[in-house]
Image (cartoon, rainbow, N blue to C red; front, side, top):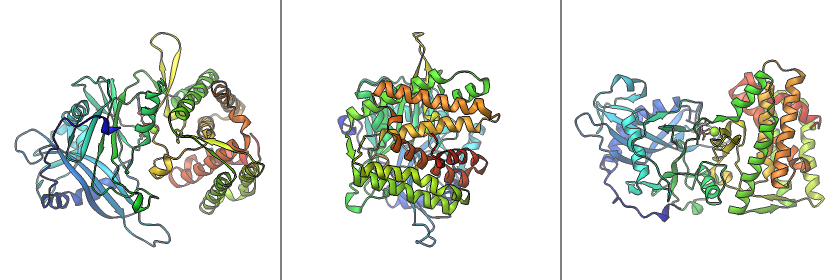
Length: 497
Ligand SMILES: Nc1ncnc2c1ncn2[C@@H]1O[C@H](COP(=O)(O)OP(=O)(O)O)[C@@H](O)[C@H]1O
Ligand SMILES: [Mg+2]
């Protein structure tokens, strides 16, 4: 993919990263970053003390030690290690983060909130080090780099062939609850910077590229991306060292910005608030999901799960239920009822049932779909975004083919979430959820020829597995929301649909 465009820029020297300066640089930043990283929304190691920081790569995109008012721009890949406790309780976790730092002798007041700190030693001593994305000059420079194919230090920038990205678009950083960081350029493009990065292509680049090449209009086609080529990539979850060829790490993807679009979650809440119909939108969302699945199955490898793999899948679900029940006692009364869904999947496998698998979205819900008004006045159009999968899972796992009903189950849970968190509750809201779930499945069946409701054992098992995951997540992170998945748990444990 990235090999298709030869670098035009010669590899640039990155003096700060060169030994022995690299060590000095890290020394000057370690303390600051160790304090700053755990406070970031996208930092995954919350709650565990940081054991150490290592520099994987440092690239000066603009010189950082120059005098004058021109800011420096430093791109870092940092490996963090959580402090080791009892290895039997929690294995040491090593993560790699992407950080973009601006460097100035003095910080203008507007950039005050972006300050990371002022190093007291090393080559950046006394300078203001801050989050570069908030500096329009530096965010603008990143766009400029993405418009031009080439390498600088460890980084390689690749504009998509034929894509046109205008110069000089004004940047603004998105402030939502994100697990990554995004910058919108002039409402024309959006750059998503992955924060926790692993070796191997990120599915949020891989799948939209494959879909765009297949001619799908359900995804904004990547216009440019950048990646890092490092000598010693950080480990990725379950890979053995032998499998760890130095694959590039995907760092960011620029895509067209869908102006005027609203995400499905907001639309669903509006419908619930105003008591307006949502079923025709859900029906077309089912069609859109099916179109994405059909295009992915045509573009990327597929397989079929047979008895051993299906039994393994069911066993994995039982294990997750056992773990969740140990952590959340509220699940206990429903254990045997929930296990029936997994037993039914095992029985389906023993009867000779099989299941086609393919590349999936992996984390499909109403917040991952955008409805854009059609400029030709022919209604509106659903697009699907954020193909990264569940960020907490290792990349190899997220890139594994799975049954399409897994995505369908995710979206069905999302309808239920929207309805359950709606304050008024009551029969109308329950009917809203039932009707929209049905409309979504109908749309999916019409466009794909595969009715998810006809794959009852799989759908019920995946929906149950998802609801169990949600219980664990809410119990740990948002106890006030626990009642939402618990309502589904009660329904699923009774075997009701
Ligand atoms: N192409 C796009 N056009 C318009 N808005 C977008 C686009 N891509 C992302 N967004 C907005 O940015 C938000 C976060 O994007 P997403 O890719 O889902 O990031 P994250 O992985 O952090 O969830 C979305 O919910 C949406 O509001
Ligand atoms: Mg998202």
